[in-house]
Image (cartoon, rainbow, N blue to C red; front, side, top):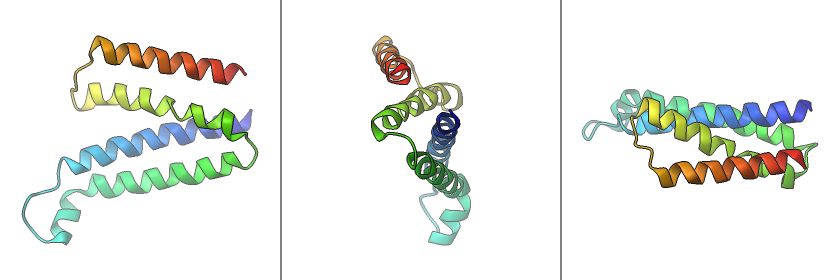
Length: 114
């Protein structure tokens, strides 16, 4: 059960990292030195660091959990990023995308119950 919590934490942190990458990528200036661009896009660097922590947690969880069980749970990240994209970046939600998320969530539930 502890491994499940580590996987969920890894997925949540990974989703935060992905949002940081998007946020930082949107702020990369068109001009300036590489150093100036890196400073201006600090969320990009933070997103990479957070994503790295997520990867370390994932590796730790994989020591004891079957990959065929753990890997589908990464799909929760799609749902978290989808929700964050709507609220943070004001991206649109179509009925088709929402239907896809329902299917993903259904699959996650089936895998988690196995």
